[in-house]
Image (cartoon, rainbow over all chains, first blue to last red):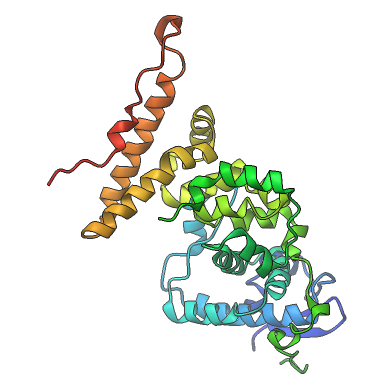
Length: 173
Length: 166
């Protein structure tokens, strides 16, 4: 009988999950080691927690039969800059599942990455950040503003100066 | 087992004007830095033109460091402190990308379009060469040996121009 951990969302809903699923979150793993099996997560809403649990469930199933060396070894080798990112997911089926999982609007993705950051689920944080970065790549500034609903707070002079400074980026390949 | 009803898919709720929120990533500059650090050099430079926050975060050395490291693998020997101080002496990662790595990558892309794929070893050598020449160029511009302030020598970076060796 798998050991169950109870997670309680910010709006008071309770979710019972298998230990190995909950342990995708390093924070939860540490808390449970100190005794508690009921973990309140006041900053995470039910809606987001459901999605995070779905991700953890899928990845726990795969991580229990690793096909490649542990991601912690790879992360240690690559962490020479202060911005760290985990090794890319090698299993193509899992990658495909991940790509489906992140087909969400930007605000949902942000809720998820903030929760995943809080819960220290490195692969999920990385997945969402990469997804957002992909939505920015190759776009013009105005398109980016439109997509992410950002206000242009530059004066026309500032904007012109920036375009000149970065003109090398605006040339076509 | 979860007993709750699943929420509506978010896409259906996006609709009306009232639903459009300001981009929440702008509330968290560090998370924004993590996103920008995953862009390629050109996209990052364009991102710096989006708004003031993105311009400020997009100038962070840590962000350009991440971008450079994605393109140029740094071995364990070059980790953290050692590489950073050298790059700082050369004028920082942002400058390094704009003057050296970016143009080197463009050249490699140009070569790729013209012929067979460049092997990763050749790519590594090409980038290493560009970095070496850039370092030498910076050193030469420091002002000359023995304190003589002469006109700076012609840049060695001409060696980066493509040479037909066919």
